[in-house]
Length: 247
Image (tube, rainbow, N blue to C red; front, side, top):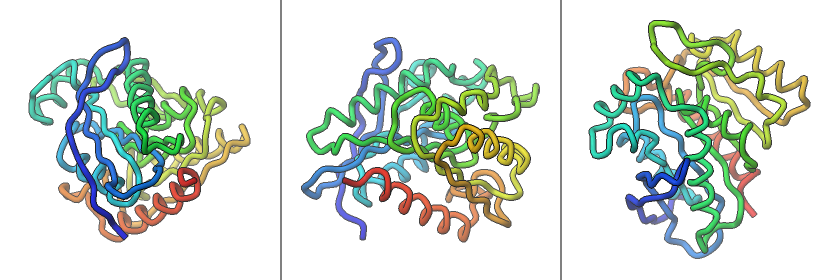
């Protein structure tokens, strides 16, 4: 059952002590709640991502979405900011980890925090959720079709990022992976390679692949949205976070 919430735009301290914008959503119920850092997709800090952040708060989590593009394009539209960051080669991995660490620290300092925190990311954010889980101490992480964990990006994309499958041994928490069978980035072969690497390191993870779905099947505002896959995916997310973030 969904409850009432408060949503607001705030400023948090990110990588290198930089002040960055973030969207904070909190349940209005009394009690202690697990925290979720929502890592936005490559199209940016947009309304679709903010709606996802509100959904977590409505379902009993304190959620925050840091604007990873705050430095490049303060005050710009999501489209303008995304274009500028793409031109620069994407968000540097070190900076992403610092920004997520700042968001987690903010959540854990709230009086309503139960001390547990997780990340979830979509598209580029899926890769970054995995990166954060391999770089920080988390209680859970969700990778929604994160590209370029296993294979490098095509040269035409201009992204200055590398595969990070070599970090599998450093995964600090249980990982949930949600993928589309028709996706090419990541492909089924990429997902199988990541699954194999995690299994070899005896990590706790569960992967689910949805038939008839490609990339961005959670994105309700985009043509790639697939209702059944998204509904099933949300069911997996609620079950996973209930197991790992509740008291």
